[in-house]
Length: 479
Image 1 (spheres, rainbow, N blue to C red):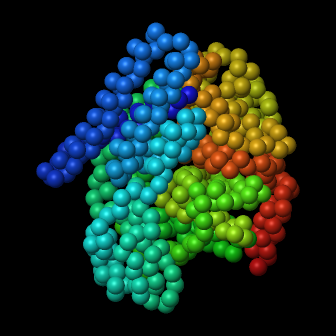
Image 2 (cartoon, rainbow, N blue to C red):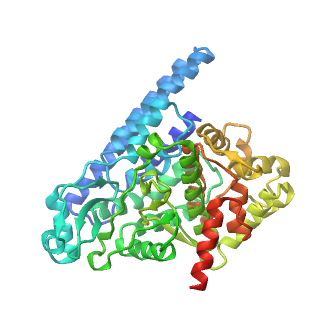
Image 3 (cartoon, one colour):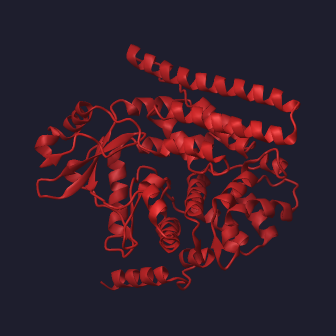
């Protein structure tokens, strides 16, 4: 598991060097080559270290070999985090996609990769002010009653400043890094290599082009904050006045292509909440996160594809604020219909029907030749929590489930080589595993199957939060 997850992460890193467009300025060319060189140096170091570890391992005992592999995982994670942590754009974004589900790694490696979820070095105040001026036509001092030049958060694509509107409203202003659009487009230009290499560690029969097209479209969307503003405004309207889900409203008159201004949201960040909350509060928070994801997927047909720990704020009254709607997937008409028969059959524990539905949906070729019970035991993995009346997510369970899914050298290796991931499932898969990882870190316990059926089958609420949500929705319909 440790080598497999780090191998996948290394594949993401390798492919992220990126080939830029045919015509580049000297500055752009130097920038691209510098990014590519840093990535390839990282890859070369990791390959050399891995070869040394394999040579030493041939003469080692099983215990010594396990220790060598653990050391390799830790050093790889630290090296990857150090390189990616200083690189904005798709490279760091790709690392973040894997870092928050790498729960099968040693604690030291987890700690190293966790730095990819933390704030990155911010840009100079003058650069942020220049973006504001270019996009909104005036300096921050003229647009806002008060402007904090030092950002409160800095991530892979932009950073957030705290400000006060002329009418006194406290707001968060997200400012895109100058030139990050070129960096991301350069990275994505070489996405076929990125995901082709990733496929070497996971699905051997992967339709790389379809996968690339979906992820490229979603990541490119993040560059235009006007699109994010529309999505966030849609979610804010949908959950306006909700008793436990809060989405900050957009301030359109202070938003543009590279600037997004929204209502300010207080609350505890993920690590602070995790450190101070009791288990009852964690269970409640886990249910809120789960309900937001499932309601979006099944009830509204549009969902946030980035269940990142930094995208939540937790409040003392049990509410959760949801942030960052840059990576959003909307189902096209009929798109989700091909996937639901697979989930229906898995939840019904019907192996024959589940495998047949998986073939129809494009997950498996028709002539795969595997026994349905064998295939079912593999594909049911992430849905085990829904087989029980009550289930407790743990980091150990997430690690084991992930190992089962991606280990091509393991028991299901031959099956994995024939699997494909339909384009429609790419972002949904991120949500399934991302939310599972969050619930594992919370050690959240609940009636997950019953909650899921509320959203999929309009079943009666099985928890107090479900009843509160149902009453709120009923009041909205009659208002």
